[in-house]
Length: 204
Image (cartoon, rainbow, N blue to C red; front, side, top):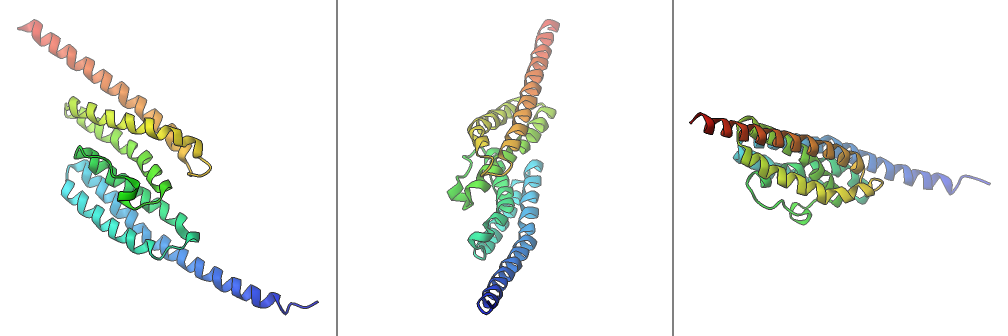
């Protein structure tokens, strides 16, 4: 018995694995830029600078398309995080502009990325709602909450796919807590507003 056939096989496999490893490192390094740009878009959205937010989103989209061309089936999982950040940013802009949230196909992302990105967007909506409450815009806070709640109800069934969509159950559990927090805050703010209105009527 010799290793005459084993050595060439191992050399071939080693070469293949080296290529995959190099491609993986390339994607991990370069897709960080997409995450950073998408995060920047989200920050601009919260500041009300939608023009900048959209420009950042376009830049992230260009980079996503560029790096996806270099992605083999073995490496597609490394695109999930940058894609979900992109989905989160795109969804937030659409909600602010009172437009339909883009579909998975329109954004050109993988199913897992789309679901996880929408789940993450719920957290950003909570922040936006509290900002609206802080400035007394209860009507806009209520509108965004309705979107937030409907989004959660549509995403809730995906918690059962936790083994396929990583962290889906944990994100849904967190989103449920966020929904309850926001509902309580809006209810309290409406009661306060109604009380102030009633007191002002009495003083007239």
